[in-house]
Figure 1 (cartoon, rainbow, N blue to C red):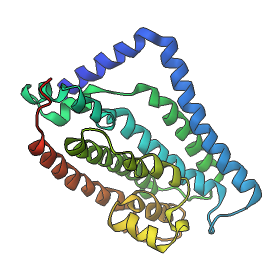
Figure 2 (cartoon, one colour):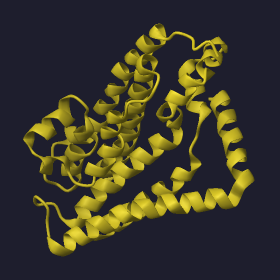
Figure 3 (cartoon, one colour):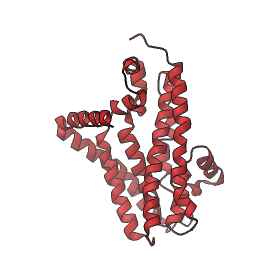
Figure 4 (cartoon, rainbow, N blue to C red):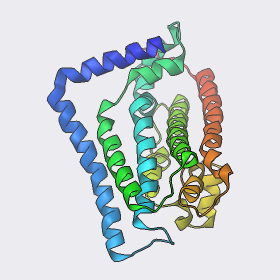
Amino acid sequence: MRVYSRYFSIHFKSVMQYKTSFLLTTIGQFLVSFNVFLGIYFMFMRFNKVEGFTYSEVLLCFSIVLMSYSFAECFGRGFDTFSSIISNGEFDRIMVRPRGEILQVLGSKIEFTRIGRILQALVMFIYGISQSNVSWNFDKILTIIFMIVGGTVLFTGIFIIYAALCFFTIEGLEFMNIFTDGAREYGKYPISIYGKRVLQICTFIVPFALIQYYPLLFLIDRNRNRWNMFLPLVACIFIIPCYKLWKIGIKHYKSTGS
């Protein structure tokens, strides 16, 4: 953690050298997410409910997904831009350093401008809570924390898969955006509205539903099974096969010669 804190400090000092640029980019990130918020708002101006879910419940759902994604993108950005590390030969230097490769890639890029998205998610979250009829207790507060932690780990795992595939392809594969940016977008609504087959895929293959749909049912008292509050922690197991694929990719790696 001491090494990572040094990376954190270095990146923070770097972005603070250009405060105006940092501020404008952060505002831009906020406004981009705000457009999504307006899309949901106009949808519910036309329809009172979507598959039985109210406006405040959808906002609560999407704000948690957006917050998780933003945390993962902020601190796991090195994996999202890993193709450049491979193509310019930087990974050769990473491998000869006396620190773990994952730690170094994590520390290679920290995207502080994603604070804009986090703030937008926080605004939606506060509004969703204020307008919802959720009966808050300790279990439901824990559920929110588990959803954010589980979502952050899940999205980070997908970024690791993206990086691992770069060992074989050199360039990043754009289809992986279906599981990152795409998941953030269709995570606006509870996954069940996309049909039974999608719900099954997002439960047993890429477990988005474990950090979004099932815990949400527990929050809004549609399913009172306390097991649902722990499902986001179960989703964290997804990081294990992601790590295994990463290790396979390292074994496959051949130096660029740069």
